Amino acid sequence: MQKVLLDPGKAVIVPETVEESDYVSCHLCVSPGSGGYSLSAISSRLEVLSRQFLPNRSRRPCCAKHGTQIAMAAQIMKPLALLAFGLLLQQIVVAAPSTPAIAPPIAPPFGLSWVETPSQITRLIERAHVRLVRKETVEHRESWTVQGFDQPYLNAVVFYFIGDALDEVELQYADPSWTLGQYGQLMGQIKEELEHKYGRSEVLARTRGKEKDVSQTVLGYRWQSHDQALDLMFYAAEHEPLAFRLLSMHYKQAHP
Figure (tube, helix red, strand yellow):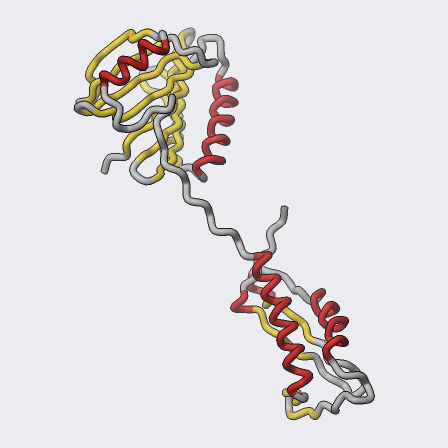
């Protein structure tokens, strides 16, 4: 749908030359350089509707010209001014951009909250009948890698803890049979869904290069709301005939 942009600060009511034998007409215009376009079509509506407000021809007082101004009886100008203002207000309301909705808070997946403790995540793992395959410390955080989730393409979930509280949940999507194009297609679908929910993203990374005969590709986007962030990342490292590719989503607390 094409949006109409109207700058109310540059909208003016321009009276046309009024002849004795004609009724009054007005044009609602937009300056050519304002980014909008002429709304002169409204003038035809004004001309038709103004007949309803003007007295008939025999009783209409004459209009006396004074330089570039036109003096008319108050009983004629007042309803015309109200009519023109109403039409202008209608166009502004229709054309004005809507106030963007506030993005909802970013909560971790699986119905979790940021106050979950390691013992609560342990009970979740047991109820979901998935496997805790690795525990380690990564950058001063405790990391749990869990596999066996019954979701398409979800290879693993990594829970990160700081102290006794959940700090990040990473969803890892991977399949050895996928091509680079299939990863790109899935990433595009996820990005579209996230932008529909959280709004436009920020580009975190977009690089491609070679390091020690290994071709590397990194592409990342971020959504942030309140004190939480969500990163969508793709990483690929290729050295024929080997290739490693990973698409991941990172629900995390946004630290300063």
